[in-house]
Image (cartoon, rainbow, N blue to C red; front, side, top):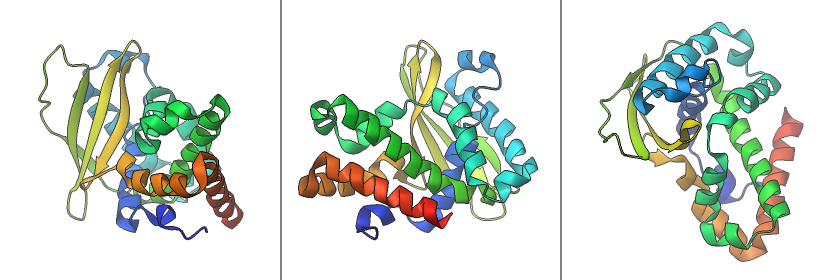
Length: 217
């Protein structure tokens, strides 16, 4: 059913805050030089740039879903390890046993679900700013945690990033908003869906959810 628990896994306040995951990443492709930045400088740079973009873009603030999807596809996803995010959510065992077609369909539906979750929240970007905490890491680390806070009119919101070092530079593979890691939000409910209806059942449930959301505009 569309009202199953995994559909409602993210609290409304978290949906709003999760917008900053996209807000902090939208400008990754604006300058190729950003690929060589240290992870904390990268987060600070793209956050500052994109918050200004979001503030100035009336279409984003009005929740233009198609524009958000196109923007995220072109600017964000090339710099996010989305496959790793999907594996972390569905579980390594289920991913390993999935066919190539199932992997492809699962990633497609998961991405649509996340994009639609964020789309309505992008209009929340008004007067916020980002404070990046000093990075605790060594030069040889290939995975780091960058801690930030989103500051605005209300209480600051915790927003932490897990990044990995790749040949193409640092890539985001998870985000923590107010104590909730993104990949954790769906994991248990996805596992329950798979246990009941299999991986194809999960993909079908995600597809129904996305089509229902699309029909509502």
